[in-house]
Image (tube, rainbow, N blue to C red; front, side, top):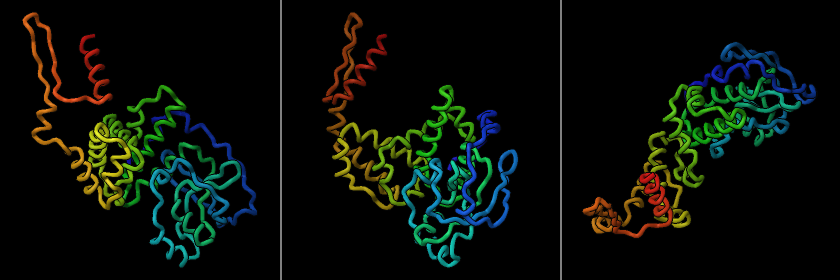
Length: 301
């Protein structure tokens, strides 16, 4: 996913803020022991607990929430064999309830198997620190879903922008040791319709460059076909990103042979008095007409 996040760029707000948590009823869980976790600028302290997974909730801003639900087939046998998750999930208290910050698959497996969930319950975790913990866990995974990460990053930016209207893409990109141009590309991918984002089953095989090419192809074909026509012609999902790109590429080229190129040509004539006439040899749709009108208005302004 994105590179390591630098929370210091957000200023002093996160270092002074405390999440208004309450102590949960100690009868709701069993305390196993004390735990410590290193984080940027210090360490977190808390307790390792065992709790009924049904009594927990999920942190809404975890990057994994923006990807399709994973198949748990690889995890269920291990969780069942050990009688629960041998690696604790990260959690915090929110209004007296245990919220799982990172470890949603382990939680889901314990829910399905009706086994207790082991949680490292950290004290005084702010929302931004919870995002940091979730980011670290997500960045360490194999087979990162770049498209899901794009959706997550746009969500994070919009959340911060609502809190601070002066917050910029440049500042957000710097938080992830990235550039504005790259972050703008990522946001463009996130804006794709859900059915396009899910066009390939092997989502972990998408690179940012491929996903951006997908965006470009989609923009091209969207000017020629309605959404229903695209869905009917493309018949997604396919297995691999390369297959999806090939199908979009073929559709983008459809009907653009030599005769079509001739039809799409335009001619510019300059009269004796300097007046310019542009003749377009094809029929423009409404969107193209609007773009042409805006271009000419800007040109002659």
